[in-house]
Image (cartoon, rainbow, N blue to C red):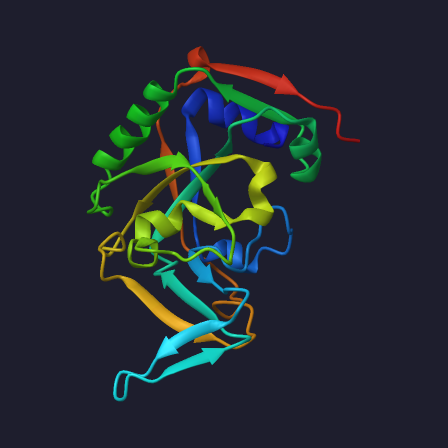
Length: 217
């Protein structure tokens, strides 16, 4: 993070959770991802579909199967598993905070969620990002919002991301995914001026944090 956010993060545990939809429009290619909140499948041999009326199989050479979540309703806080000067440079951030007690950090987030009446669903999802190839079939992941929220294309694998996420409006429910066949479009949604965000405060976390600084000039 940039140094200006360090004090608030350490002393108050201030965490800004951005909606998945926010990252669709973020133009920095290191942070932005036009396919955030989606699971894609584009086999090298083409996408095979079956017509339900006749059972006929059709091969669509340039098509991509896309399953996406309600991206305005899922909020994420992103960290990394590695200490890297390359990441610091890419993210234009001269400070890295190493969290030395992940259990306390998770407990703090859960506590902050528990006292927020506007957030009905208190389920916190967290874990390593699953980096996948667009050629690999999604099996059952396409139907599970929490799996989609913790997955990204393998082109982002160098970030070694570890993510925390929660949702509103039943966005974790299995039925809350939408599917489409894409024939070359890129963005899931149109760029907007504002995107949902949630701020949580988990209290002073300085006792289980270690600070690393980088010269990114």
